[in-house]
Image 1: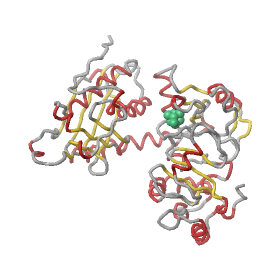
Image 2: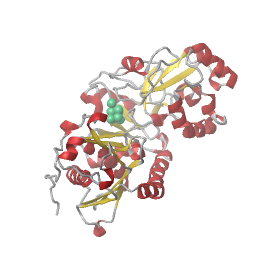
Image 3: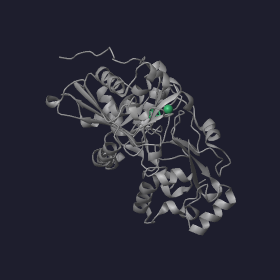
Image 4: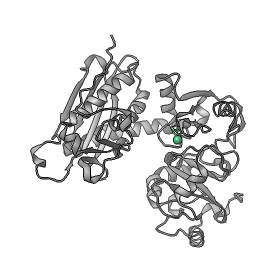
Length: 424
Ligand code: SF4
Ligand code: ZN
């Protein structure tokens, strides 16, 4: 028997209307994560027979604990475990449900949620605290939304919130990280050749009507939040939803990554605005970009390669433009050969602009981005070209950002792009 959950036991309002609400320092009462404390979240599948529906547990101090008296701001580590169970539940749905923690928490009036996994960051307002909001209410909201939005697969749901530094650290290491790693490994083992279907993502058409992401195992959505497994799971959870399969069939051109099936679906879903896309080229019919790309890559002709800028980087890149300036010419669902929005995780994919020579074309990235992707990038370039520690050959803003000095650095490192075929 399915019980519809609509009432939420929470002293503040819960609605999508509060989604964009920011919590600034002066109105903040409590903070979790955001580089100050550890903060992670996990959705995991439990044995439904052993679960107790609507069990909400806070392990560790709450925000009204006596230890915070007289403090300006309550700062605690946090680990959130949402355990779900149901006959129709599948392991592959976990990441889709987990991503919703971001949205559900943001629905709370007086709460802000940023990030995901172990880079989650939560803030609560003084006003919410004064109205009686406590940590168990985060559990109540997650419980109610998981049950109502995913009633097809979630029959029982338990939420445990840990705030003891020791628990958060230990469980983070022993339980959570291995699960993240296992998921990444599973995703990493899939290639575009090994599957029969790609997926469209139409979520961003609400503001970029001529944009569609084609999501493949080796090319996640440009927002970074929709992997091929996520798209596949979303299709099962929400058959009429934003992710629809494309049975790929034979490729027209394997180098460029073109399929009749992909073109037909792109043309149909954009009402003819875009008729041809390649999946592996940034020069010939590159995929369009909406506005939520994590990164933009663009050609730096004199270096015979590309630079990549991430959204967080505020300064001018070696092509003379900031992220914002690049975004204004790349976004909105138009094809801009030579420039393309993409997810962070694509930097490390063997399909990254493989038609133009792939990852070894990357000549410059902001340092933070480079450090973040270095491990996967190095591994992929090593497998593709034999080059060790490729990331060390890639210039960054701490070395140089003006064209001439970047070139000098690349030459001193013997960067492979300099010896490749002319990019244009
Ligand atoms: Fe979907 Fe992300 Fe692409 Fe938007 S950017 S269409 S959410 S994959
Ligand atoms: Zn988008």
